[in-house]
Image (cartoon, rainbow, N blue to C red):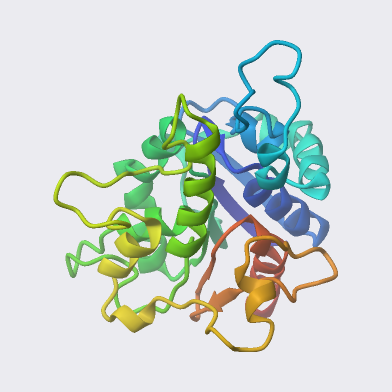
Length: 287
């Protein structure tokens, strides 16, 4: 049985990327260990669980619970069910803390994402987690990162080279196309918090998308072409790139996962089943 360490923020992680990964991995016979900043059970981004809070009328009485935009962007029924199950699990209810997390007896490190700034910034900016990621790469522990989890990896520096641990690697992450589309939609409907879908926004003098996940991750790589996305016109390009279709336990066609040896990466919640299955297969192959 392989053991996977999954560090998450105390709040605002993506429910699909965490819960579906947990479900796929534990169903396959692996052991999952969670770590939060406080050492207490974490809480997902409520908007991504319920869908409430992304429509123009979200703050109005009576109709505020009705979601349209939120229903389209939130975790789907499969992921919400996985989240409910995960919340009741022994491992989720008894996490370790980031400060006490160790790679001893750990076979893989899984870095999920999320985007809501109030919780995710503490996760991505954490020097403790960045050091843990760098150590995992140095030890040869399998690292799997999805969405903003790739940004945590990109910010993790190899102390021997002074470069990102992703330098010289092939990776994907949340693409600017996907991030921009969701941001432009929600900034028109969540008027009181227009940057809800951006963890980091551009400062004066920075071009559009400079602080996007794709742009920052790409700056950490050896070559621009090391950032991988579905090639336009390739088979199932629209299915994989529209952001409208998610993979399932039995259908990987919408997913896109990059395998670079002991490092796996994926883009968004719609890749999670395939991403977690790929990690499971890699763990089983290494035993």
